Length: 184
Length: 184
DNA sequence: GATGCCATGTAATAAGTTACATGATTGA
DNA sequence: TCAATCATGTAACTTATTACATGGCATC
Image 1 (spheres, rainbow over the protein chains, first blue to last red):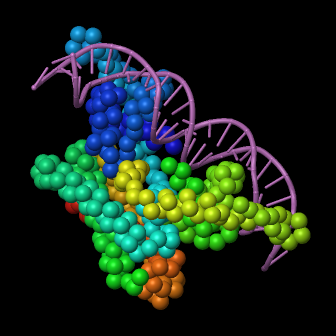
Image 2: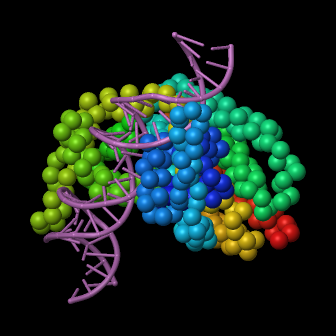
Image 3: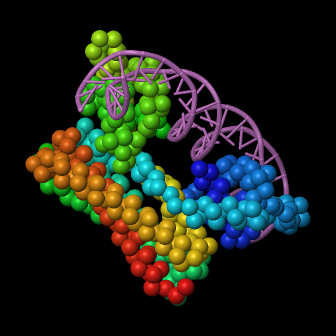
């Protein structure tokens, strides 16, 4: 499926970037639905260059340090848009370690089960708080109206992440309530 | 992390199974949080046997067909329970192709965006319906009370899957409403 | 001069998918 | 007898992670 390819093409399509820039965007802005380590990004950039979908110019940062600033080519743009328009069937539901553990919870004692759920809840609540802070920090309020700006994409995926996380917290709270009120 | 290892150990811990049985359970019951192809399961079973965490006895099915019925060993049980009790830090949010596309939606026309969202919505609604049917078909109502039965694990992960899917549908509907009411 | 970030790469390994390969059993 | 399902495996490949490896820049 070459999904990293399209994630990279999509980002470079928004504007020229270096591999390091891509890494930062993946692991800061896109982290709620995509990410990649630099060790995966650099080889992919090399491959995309060989395929003629992107090009780079070498730019000097300071005295000596060279960086490669990548831009998308016409071929790359075409390939990306083609992928973007294509309708995909649903991916399989992603794997989830905590749900896997929850499935096996009959092997644990009431205390152990609650420890697992409380710890998960704490982490999920922290994550939700961060997402909500991000939403408040962004100047989305004005741009929400304009669906056809890049900010609208940023906005809806963030909104989706918050809704998802809230539901996750709600689920954990319901489970905890049920487990706590059960007889050991 | 050897997660497939623990998924397999957990299932065999519930009762003796063949590789084929595991495949069916993964891709029917557990599919909302774990899955594996037979080409991954069989080598893992071999490895776990070599590690002494499971054993098998060969059973005849019909006249000639042999199948391997795997059971967990004491070492396997210990290893599994150890993993189950361990507290994990949150995994990174799973990758999501549709959200990736949604992030880039500014490159599409209003019609193309709506096509993507409507198709996604249709599929998500179908999935939700299936999950809700599964919930109704299960005789959970009586066993919910007993938190320490295997059925309780089945129940909460299914409940979680339904909540997650409902939120997903809700998000898609909100996005569609917003996009539709925008000026092209 | 030390720390943190910028910047780019490769190698080894692990995890997962697709395709290849074979054959038995069950029920219509 | 045909189709679906049961049953088990391997090979090639793709995707992703961890570790190895190097060096510049900016600021305190």
